Image (cartoon, rainbow, N blue to C red; front, side, top):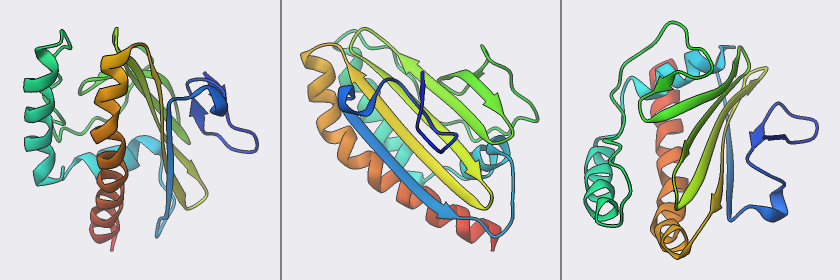
Length: 160
């Protein structure tokens, strides 16, 4: 795990070595913890995500990738390293940073939810291991950017 300079953002490995990298920021109306931001975003998952995860699980399982099912919408009060939030493993947590990973034989994904003052950043970094991982990331890389933008819109509505 690498910390980006002058931030609290964590990524899998140095930027030039990543297969995929996306960082998006939004301004929050008030300060909150990284876990509170996760809970707020996940409390109202985007409706199309359920379909997207079903398609992902159906196609990917044919290539030996475990089904992940998507986001439950469940909120948690506390979380510790080694626990799971939905299909993600928690690899780091403090008030300003929540690092979630999913690793398999095709790729490693790290999503970092970080807070700096009133700025929320969602950063995803991916390392691929084989051709299936590269092919998988073609639609997912495009969709991911739109999904995060949609999550930010919904978050801003929820927070007023």
